[in-house]
Each structure stands twice: as structure tokens, then as C-alpha cells.
Figure 1: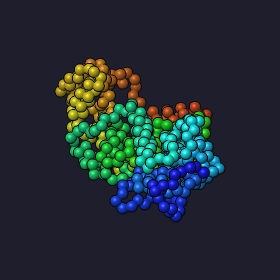
Figure 2 (figure 1 turned 90 degrees about the vertical axis):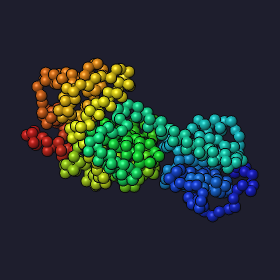
Figure 3 (figure 1 turned 60 degrees about the vertical axis):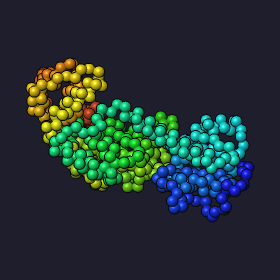
Length: 468
């Protein structure tokens, strides 16, 4: 048993050792703010800490030994663990070492009545956020917990910022056309709600830009996290979204949190949702329904508060009919759909977009802004822009790099395209699919996985081409 001076700061005995989440009226509390687990073999210490912490944090649980603590931890996620080093049975040090193998997002504060240098070094080696010597004041423990939560928030924000360094999307819409005004009006109206939103439209129309605007206007305090569902293999996408436990697969040297956890309290943007494999669609549906994620290789579930914005340039209804997309997931995502207008549908915005890109990119590149003549604008206004705003931006970047006008850059590009015989898009698709099928030795299942489509879809296309 640890030594603890029983003084007036410790409240009288209270029945029960379970959950405490009911602060008195008028005291500051946020049920979604943080969850804390207290592990100590002395009932007085548990009561003292519980009384002090339940007024500040959303959920406080207590346990008298590592066995009870592990049972609680298996049942729910904790943001902070406050553990005594000397516990009956398994010591606090040994138990936390096991916890560290499964969770990287739980901060640990050790407390002890015995000031031993070796013990302190071991605690720090395990990544302890703080080490408090008994007896301590209430303010010391509260400050330690607040520091833990602050460090975790900064860690999450830094992770998100690193992922966004290479982002090429702008921070706001440019244009005065009717389609853009209507789109912006709807975004402002729905952003403060927590409803799931599905953004539909061609590539390059600004779906991520719309998702960022929705998050920015939502008032949600968490981060905006974006992931391209079609850019990662299925096995990596699962780990990226949900995280994984240590040893869950080859190369998983340590536990890692998924993007759902990093987006907690904020917005998760699932780009190209139509490319998500069917098994992953099943797991995503479960997360949307239960609001918990389970890391790969773990039995532990982590509660998440995430607003989902999904985007696709495909017709999801057609994918549902083809068996490539789950119907129940489609309806779960399609609570509200916003259609992103193509650039050819808002041609009157082209002059504003051209000026905006020229001024901004010239400043970023350290070059002189290029002049845009009437003939340049006429040529751009008469072009259909299949790549939409992204293609327009690329043309402007090219003309700044070459020191030429946008019209000349478009002519140069058209001349290069005319040197080869044009090929229809459906023919390009046919050649690609047949090439992949050949590389997989005629194995349709393997070819379908590599192409990111259902085998049923592959067989339908082969039948249409007389290749079945």
C-alpha cells in the first residue's frame, strides 16, 4: 500500500467505483472533452481524484488494480490514464507497458509516494507525460491532465498539417456566376449542421475546396482531414482510416491511430469514395452507424465524433446497380448531395479565375504576372475545359513558367496533342483493362482487384467487348 497523508482535502467515502460523469449544476463540463481513468489501490485517493476531475472532464472511471483497469480500457477509450506505480499484482509500470503496445493516443501520468530515480527513468522511457510525487495538490494534477490534452491536440494538428503541405487546392471559391452563388449559399446554410454531405461532380471542379469551406464554416473545433480513397491499396486504406495495433501486420512495429481519430471533433473528407473496395465500405458503414472505430488487429473500440464529407466523380447510383457500391452506404452518405458545376457551365467566371490564378501564382513563383489579351480570353471562353478549374490553373502555371500568354500555351498544347492520332476514352479503358487482365494471367478476380472494380463489372465489360 502506498503512503498518503489523509487530510481534509480528501472527500468523505462515496459508494461505487464505476463511471463518474455528472458534475454539479453550474460547473464547467463537456461530456465530449476528455475521458480519464484513475488506477490506485487506495479508495481515498480514488475518491479524491475523482471528485477533483469529474468537474472538468466528460468521463472519469476508477479502478483499484491493473486487472480492473484493463477491463475498463477494453470497454472504452481513455484520453488520459492516471496510474499509481505500485499496484497489487501487476505493477502500474508493467501494465502501462502493455497499454503502450496497443494505444499511442492515450497519455499516461504516473504517481507514487516513493521517489526512486530508476522508477522515474523507467516511467519516462515508457513515454509518461508526467510524474507526480505524493502528496500533491489538486491544482498540480489538474495542470498535468490539461498539459496532456494540450500536447495531444498539438500532435494531432501537426500530423494534419504535414499531410496538407502538398495540397494544391485554393482556400475559397472565385466567381460570380449563378451556379457558384447558389453553391455558396447552400454551403453556408448546411455547414453548421452535422449531416453527412456527398459532393458530386467532374474531376477538377473543386470538391475538396467545397469540403474545406463546409468545415471552415461549421464551427467544429477539430481538424479537417482529407484522404483519397482511390490512392491507397485496400490493406493500407484500412490502416490509414482506422489505425492499427502493434504487430497487426508485417511492418507494424508500433501502434498507430487512424485518420478518424485525428479528425475527432472535426471533419473527415473521403475523396473518390466510389473507389473504395466493398470490404472497406462495410467497415465504413459500421463506423458511421456506431460512431466507433476499431484499429486493425485490436479488439478495442475508440469513440469518434467526426463529420463526414464524401466526394465522387462517378455515378454512385450506377455503381450500386452494378454491385460495386453498397446501397445502404450510398443512402447513408447521400443525406444531402451537392453538385459541383463544371467550368463550361460557369464560363462567365473564367476571366476572374484567370486573373486570380495569375496574381497569386506569380507572387508565389516570384515572376512577373503575364498579360492576358482579348484573344486569349476569347480562346479560353470558347474551350470546354474537360479538366475544369484544375486544368485552367495548370494552363496559367504553364504560361507563367514559359513567360508566355495563356492563348499561346493552349495553342502549343493543342499542337502537341495533334501529333498523335486521337483515341476515344472508351477505347483507352478497353485497352487498359485487357492489359491488366493479361498481366494477371487471365485471372479475373485478381484483375478486378488491381483495377479497383467488382468482378461483376469486369465480366460485364468483357462480355460487351466479346472477350468473355
